[in-house]
Length: 222
Image (tube, rainbow, N blue to C red; front, side):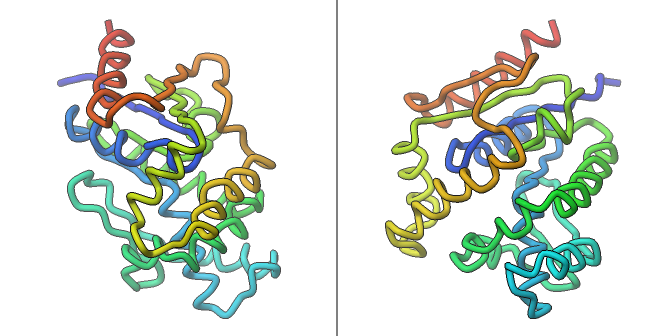
């Protein structure tokens, strides 16, 4: 039986974490976990409960009480919270604008980190997990840990291409730059920690970025 493999990829918004991670997971036959989708899903939960973003206790309660399910199939991504399919909704501007109420609260992060670790441990062949604190908090013992970055202008352009006309320039800057600023108060996802490989993909295509990660995996496994 092949040795189990865990790959952790973090980085700022629009750096290409999701598309790269899915591509690597497909290439290696591994599961895939989008931890950011989990934060977005519980954002839907607190909004549906009528909780205001400023109500920290309410946000914590909604997070801890959320019945959260997420696909780990890189070819078929879906997310459900409290029985509702929120796969499309979590990418809407309203959710993007209010997810920091979850991601900047330590109690919410702790709850979701525990869920993320359980999902990762349940993947028999291994998993590619991506998110802002994957390499340092969620999976510091992953076999491969990678920080993926790109210049801010490139990150915003990539996020614009992903979202299309769902957002205007102001909303886009809010999603990419403000969220990075907010989340950086709790986690460091802009500089590589000890043992974490830094890959700047500003001038790389998606295919080149995926190949760079696969090369890193190959060199790590010897």
